[in-house]
Image 1: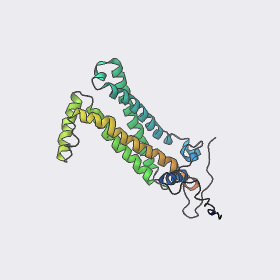
Image 2: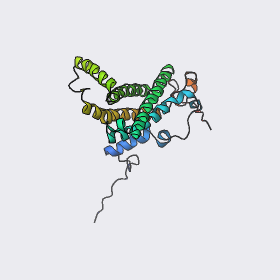
Image 3: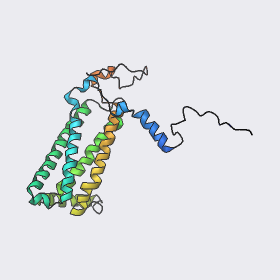
Image 4: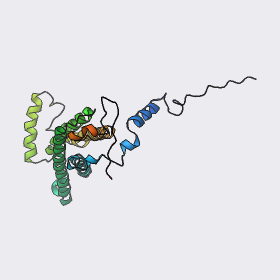
Length: 235
């Protein structure tokens, strides 16, 4: 009886799942986002500066916004008008939004003057700007949910503007139920997705160095030599 022996498998393919989309996805993520990049233990020494604090402050503000918003949405708009706990939760939500935008605007301005799109970080900069724009729309819908005279006035002023550009049929700011769903479901998902992508891109490309540290940044590729310098870590 003759036996047929299969050829030895290619070590580059064996066990990698190279022929499946899950295997290819795993290899892509491990190549571009290895664990030491995704969850680093060290950062370059120049990160020990106030210029790098405001981005994380915006993320912390977003976490408080989501947590307080979940409590508000579970109890409905009437609750935070008549309940002391509702008033407090609504205030936490409001001031979290204020701090979020303060940190975000300062973060964007600092990164603009640092030319944060350097070193292949253009998409990182774009996602940061998109996160700001989507957050403005989300905050606008939240303002309409105050259900007071101010929000009613703004709603009908905005209704005329949205009708003028032809989108009032899909985004009816006078419909409280529709705006409520936009605010607690669709727009938060958009903000969360863009912010998550932004953070992943920061991990993939590293935090941008100051302009005067660009020549010695280990996270910037040397276009002339193809090498990188040694990264300086803080203890």
